[in-house]
Amino acid sequence: MVAVLNQFNTDDEIKKAEYDRRCEDELTDDNKPSCDIIAETYEAIEADNLDTIRFLQTDVALWQRIKEQFADHPTIPQYARFFIDYESHEINEIRRQIEIDRETASEFKRICG
Amino acid sequence: MTEKQRANLNEYAGEDQIISSHEMALSFSKMKDTRVNVMSRIPGIDRACEGFRGGELITISGPTKNGKTLLAQTLTVNFVEQQNFPLWFSFEVPARQFLSQFPNLPLIYMPAKLKPRAMEWFDDRVYESFEKFNTRIIFVDHLHYLVDLARQKQVSLEIGTIIRRLKTLAVNGDFLIFLLCHTTKGKQDGVLSYESIRDSSFISQESDSVIMIKRTPEEGELTARARIEFHRRTGVMERKVNLIKIDGRLMELRASQQTTRERADLA
Image 1 (tube, rainbow over the protein chains, first blue to last red):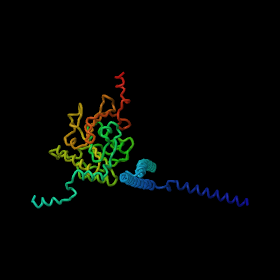
Image 2 (image 1 turned 180 degrees about the vertical axis):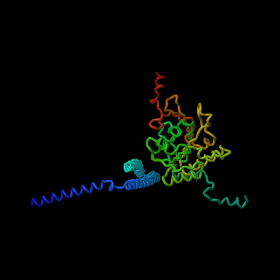
Image 3 (image 1 turned 180 degrees about the horizontal axis):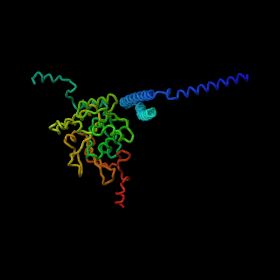
Image 4 (image 1 turned 135 degrees about the vertical axis):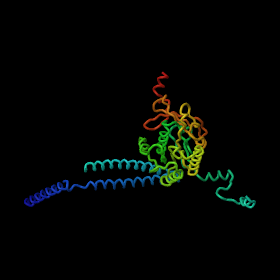
């Protein structure tokens, strides 16, 4: 039993060493992730965020029309006001995130050279 | 017109037929008064104007660099806080600079690219913004970018045509339009009035209200005075409001915010 456990631990050590060696290889200059992929990823995220902003803007307009249409309703205008506030706040937050991501992508590009 | 044509008019029932005042009043009571009813959140202006409503054309004028655009931007921020997101035509200030002047960027709409001196294009953008984003408040900075001054012999008449077109747009679309105009160079000293507005008396004639703004350096570095020259709906005339710039926005200067100089004078 002890012999089996010792063999298991040895195998485990060998596997760990092999894993570390492969990680080291991946981090060398020949095998590091392409900077193009990083830039493309950020561009894709930005495009997605811009689509979200445009969707939210359209939704804000829709809630405004609902608020106008049901101005005399006891509760609908309150819901509309809530969603307009929330979505216009979200638009602002997403815009800020896009600006942060652009700076990050620019920094990556500088590091990659 | 022949007698037969005249006789036929007796049966005319087009949408523009002649009706009585009672029928007209009854047709209005079916529709909502206006969908735009916003406050400036500057108490003195709100007392004078009782808010701003759809169908109105408001002129903001004053000497160069005396706060017209700042007042318009202040109103913009205050309208956005009331969930009314305006459409801006910033011809005079480049878009990047214009947006950077807001301490916190509000949600407003603007053309990606401007086309000055093209009223058809202007109308199209206004309706596009309404259809896409339900915008009912429009700011134009400023009037002289809508007029081709170089090609017009009768500038005053051309401006009058543009103003009437803007007023018609406001009424037909239930929009609220703020129009910024410059004053004539010779009339920048002393008391300003709507007669100081450059190039055409039609501007003040067709506007529902004229707000003149001028800095008051004698009262402080960041102070100005807005004067509501007249308001067609409320009947107010020559109402003054003292303003101060705080955190990039104009606010009413109250007695409690008297300048150090005034306090020293009183002492």
